[in-house]
Length: 202
Image (tube, rainbow, N blue to C red; front, side, top):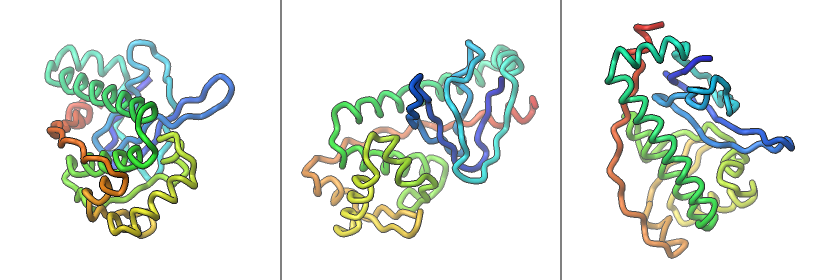
C-alpha cells in the first residue's frame, strides 16, 4: 500500500457499489494526495484512474508513518490535506442534496478555478481533462443537462469553450442567469505539498 502525491496530470476517483454502480467521488490534480483512503485500514476504498498523462511520487504507508512521526510538519500537512478532502466531499453532498443543477455546475467550475489559481495557474482559463459525462456523474446530472448548461453559459457570454479549454469571462452573469446571489468569497487555503519530504524518503 502506498500514498502518492500528484506531481503532474489529473486523476479521477470512483467507488463501485455492491450492485456494480460506479460513482465518481472526486478529481485530483497537482499537489493532491491519492491513497489516503487506505491509511489505517490497509485497503483502498476507491479506484483511481488517470485522465491524462500523469506523474506521481509514491511512498509506502509504513515508511510514511515513520516520517510523520519524525517530521511533525509533514504530519500537519497531511492533516490539512485530509481536512480539505473531507470538506470537499461534504460540499459535494450538500450540492447533491440542496442545490439546483445550474448551481452545482457553477460551483464545480469555480472550485476548479480556485484550485488552479492556488497552483499559480490562470484562474480564468484552464483545461477540463474530464469528459462532460464524467462531470455529470460527479455532480449527479445527466450528460444532456451538463451540455445544455454549458451551452447556455456560452450564449450569455459568461464562459468560452474551446475543446476542453474553458475561459470564465463573467462570474456575476453566471449567477444572475439563475437569479442566485454570488456566494461569499472564501479565504483561500494554503495549498502545501509534501513532495519534497517524500522525494527525499523514496
